[in-house]
Structure formats: structure tokens, C-alpha cells
Length: 316
Image (cartoon, rainbow, N blue to C red; front, side, top):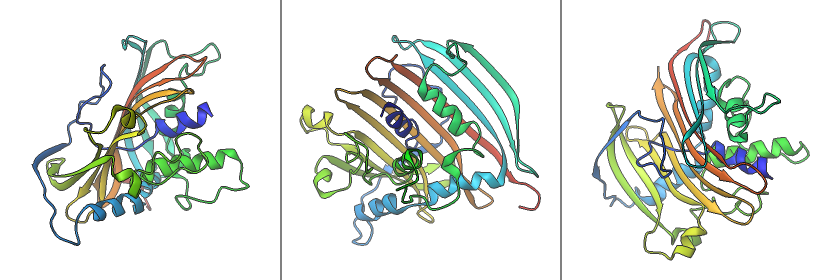
């Protein structure tokens, strides 16, 4: 159960972080969006339901990750781990060239590590960092970019396949329930009639990467509800960025916090996309998270992943 929950929440969803909920070092200093005015949607055919339906039904985020396999690109990955006082305990920096110009190969352009990172057996001390390393260091081998339908029927295919589908649901179709995940499976379903009473909706207009006009659709827990009700809501904020020109989703930000007798977590994640020759591809992924569960060391970590210089290899 511990690994399922960690896996599901290490790879959440997001868009530009507008304030750091966890009070410590933040590796993300890249500012990509500038908001200008609040937007009042009055047209009957364009409003809350338009945004909600787009969030729930969109599959282009998933496709953008799968499309990385066709491209040569450079990835810069920064990982930080922290002690209980939120002081940096371990650091990892990697600059990697993912070359798809012919048979795929991965080349380290830079690799630096320091501090407390590994166990005696050579594995990372934190399961969070281990999963990050597996999923994002080499997207060619990541289950996130495997071909096939986004959400499949995993019955009879073993636990691992079932966990992958739970992960895909959380990342790529926020708002849907995650079946088979005890304690929090239904708490991700924030757009039901019952759950909407606890959230406020807001719209803003802005500019993304200095050239793309966007809407920011933000769903946030209401400030005037009781503290007990707030504590029971896992998703505190879900923000989605839409390209005004075609309503494509360019980014997501999620702030999740929840506590029960089995675990305690506080996680913020951000995923951003951009266009390369008309193709939407991932450009930035950030994570800030604290995990605490019985009989294990509390996990505190942050990541910054930047992908750039995408181009198609020969014959692609």
C-alpha cells in the first residue's frame, strides 16, 4: 500500500506554482506565465462546465508524454532531499541528451551528486526519489509513455498493471475517481455535484511564455468552510492552463494534502507543455512533497525537470 500511494502522488499534475505551500528551498525559479485580468464568463455555451468537461475528457497530456519518444531533446534534472528541519540533505543534478536520431541512446552531459542519498545496497534512501529516477530519467523506458489506450482494463494482468492505470488516472484525467485505492480513491473526484459545494471556481486571462494567450481555470477549496471539512478534502487546488486559440491544455498544477492514521502527505506538483513545430510536448515538471508513514523515515524532497531543444530525428 505504501508504494502504491507514493507512486500515485509523486507524479501528480500541475501548472505554474503561484506560491510555495511548503516553507523551504524551491528549485523552480522559471517564471512562465503572467496573469493580467480576471475573466467573467457570461456566455451560456462557455463557462464552468466547458472547462470541467475539458479537464475530465482531455487525453492530449498523456499523448504529449508518449510523443517524446519520437524526439531528440535535452533534459536537466535537479533533485533535493531534506532533513526534518527542511535543510537540504542531498542533491542530484543531471543533464541528459536523449538522442532519437537513429537507434535511441542516452548520454550524460553532466552528473553531480552530494549528501545523503543512498542506502548501503545502492538504492536511493527515499522511495519518492527512486520512483522519480525511474519515471523521468529515461522516458523511453517509462510506463507513462507506453503505447496503447490511456486507461485500460487491468483485470487479470497483475497488480503492477493495475497500479499503472491508477497512476495514469491521477495524472492525466484529474477529477475521475481512482478505483481500488482505499481511503483516497474517491477524494480525487472533485467535480461531482456533492463535491462542488466545497470549491470555488475562478478564471483569469494571461500570457504564457510571453507569446501564448491563455485562460487559467482554478478550482480551490472554499475559505469559509469548516476546518474539519477542509481537512477531509485531499485536493486543495487544481489549476489548468488553456491555450485561448485552440483550448488545448498547456499545464496543470495540483496542491494535495491529507492525513489519516496510515499516512500524512503534503504535495504540490506542476506540469507544463509547449509547442515544438506544432507538437505539444512536456517542458517543465516540478514537485514539492512531504510524506510521513509509520515505521519509516519521513520523505521530504523536491524536483525540477526541464526539457528543451526538441527536434525530430532523421526519418521521423
